[in-house]
Length: 188
Length: 207
Image (tube, rainbow over all chains, first blue to last red; front, top):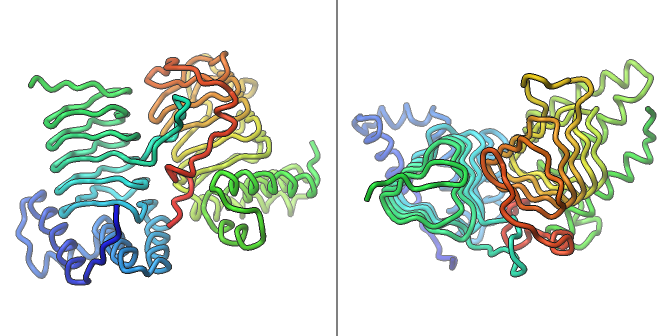
């Protein structure tokens, strides 16, 4: 993942797209009053802190990125590594024990529930050791409560990951994943 | 039981040294300073201090345990019981959510990821006062792993995320996963002793 600088305007556009997706999710209109109401929502604050963390990281202001990450980690227990790519329209339902590790790619309009952990594998299974590539997750994916996605894998778009699922293999799009380890229940 | 302050410091030094080697940093004053405020290291330090104060025959020092619970829970988001017996070399990830009950005995150089909870659960047939969870040396307990029965885990066992361990693991170097957790494979001990998450940076969350 190469470092490209990100302008302040595009950061604000990302935050606006997050709010727009939250409005679509709640079947509401995005108005100025709604934005004010969102600014008291701790999930929205957590997302805004993350977006600014990435803004400072990409603009070579690492110390500010660490400060924003630290606030997120201390207040909301949301730990997101700076070397992640999260597309526009992130929706965090409850900012509680969310861990997103290094080199994770999330697509557009992803929904993260509470207690998700996503990151590169750390359990040694072969002599070759572990790779530092995290999961690559497509667009419109729903991550259920307490799901764990670890390893150098990819999950297709429009997948739904159920509660307390441990995913350690790649799955195609439109998958419905349930169980520890995950099985695909999709008919197609 | 009596624990000296020197012993406490010695244990914490080993914890720090293992954490720094796992992150691939040199052991010197500046690297310690950069890591001491991280949630995992602070939590281990508070646990060692709590354990030292808990076994003092002094009411005022004993009440310090209650005071130290505040930073432990509200800063580190972990709960480690001072009665739990943990050998030196303990490393916690910076995610928080680890709760260790009083009935846990842990060997040296173990690693706990976020939300790992080896605690005796309220299950039928468990003697809460006498049963113990025994975890061997060089174990890696993954994210969201629950250990609720009084089980014995051998040396070098790696538990994958979201598993629920119900039975004992006898063979060292086993990888276990699933609900209920079963053996998935075996790795030689030499490989586990050289385990380090520097590549994946799962522990450090460093910038």
